[in-house]
Amino acid sequence: MSFADMMAALFADPILSKAALYQPKGSADVLSISVMAKQPDAVTGFGLGHIHTATTLFDVQAKDVPQPQVGDRLTVDGITYAIQSEPTADLDRLIWTLNVVSV
Image (cartoon, rainbow, N blue to C red; front, top):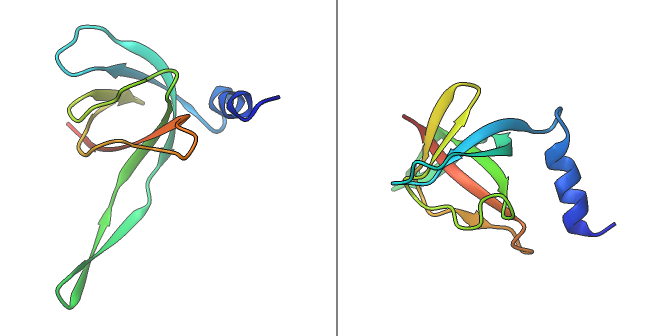
């Protein structure tokens, strides 16, 4: 089994992933995909202080969403999010991490 197949199996697991709807910006097309949610807190340095903020990140498979862009929308558990910064890909370019904000 290849690494890509193993990643696909993880995204198919209903315990690890969630069903989502993905809509590219400016398009009426809606894709049904699986996502893995991450909500780590981020600590950002600002001068001599630090700002502690909550973030919402979703991992999606590149085979499902080949070119995510800022402004694309994602609906998970009835909440709609917009991608707010450039998506980042993993080393193998199999997974995109999307930094989102609820809209």
